[in-house]
Length: 483
Length: 133
Image (tube, rainbow over all chains, first blue to last red; front, side):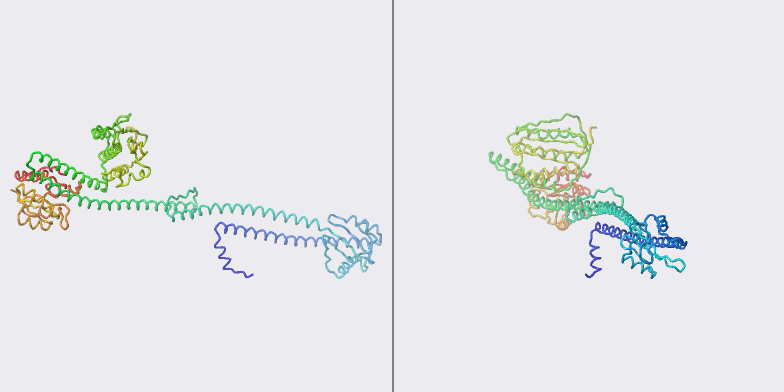
């Protein structure tokens, strides 16, 4: 398999930050374990060498001892046997003395005395004669040393050493060390995964939020209490989105203003186009009334009544153009400290005659004294007047209008409720749109203008209605509480 | 009787105002634009110019500014189809005698003319607006 470096590099770069961190940790862990294993084998080899050296020293010591024992001309097998027994130490499995005729003369293992050497052992003896190191087979370590006293060759000493314990001990230690390392590295890896997640999750949040922002959803806010770079990233992201939100708000306002300016231009030309002909008609009518009065008595009255009706209708069309202009004109509010309760009384006073004529009962519900609000009295009066007239209009056969006022901390509410025909659910959403109307002779400016005025006061207007049962309009205005 | 120039870019408007004023016994001339009104004013030295605010070319306020430079300085009355407080204030500040909102009523228009006459007779300051706003 060909090892393609750019491909591997690209693959690594393409990994998510999370995986990259984990991969780095894993690589580090593996190299530490490899290093540990390598060090272990080095240590084992060096300890083994040390062990060999010590064994060689021991063998030489035994050799000297045997030479002394044998050179004292007491070649007594029993004495040899006693000497061997004294030598037997821990780790030494068997010590034998072998005669020149390949027979075991003495051994710590009594069963082997008098036995002939096996073929394998003989080969070891040859090796020993040639001066080569005699290594063990399996877990047993065999050392064979020739015994020479003066010129006389007496035989060999055969040492069988047990390396099993030593090896097992070393291995157990290595396993312990490696598993401790693995556990520590595992914990490290786990921690680094958690850390990586902790680091990358806010980044993922930012990525997701940025995606949402790109889709046009600006209600994004990344919540984090971190103070590091991630926290900074989140806060600058929030700042950016905040700026975008502000900009969008401005844009919306601008669009609205442009729209109104458009309506403004439109209404100006409408006013001009309507009022100029009206002007001509009005003046002509006045002139006709003065100049061309019929002489017959009955005709004169009829003529005057017709003229009056024409003039009234001219006033109505002119008023239509005026209210059209009023909506499109930007509102210039003249805020004053006003007793709203008194203002409501004034409006009721204005509509009282009309209410009596149309058999409408006005119920005023208020249980407080003067309430001072910071409003434009003229505009608020017009708004209330509009709403009350709308209510009257909804009750062609008479009914009841209740005007309730009340205040909670921060808001003062004026609720105007009627028992009229109400408005269908489909139309409720449209009632505040300019030029929407259910009246035959209305132009749909009243409530739209009212809404604008209330909003300019930083207030809110709400509308509830059920068809056939009546409607309720609630105006909420900012209030500093009772004074 | 006083001399009046009626300035409006719509013929019907000029004609009906002229008809009424003629009928009242004023000596009335008409002009279709601000520029034409200046020429007419130079010719007849009117006492009153009754001008529409919104006209193509020279509008009512510009005409007002121009005639005030003339030595005979006629009284200016501005008419408009869309009265705003700011335009009325501007006209009055610049020296208009009154400001009328269309549709005009014959009575209020004639009252204004008469008010002006009284003012001129007394050679005093113009009286407060006749309340046509």
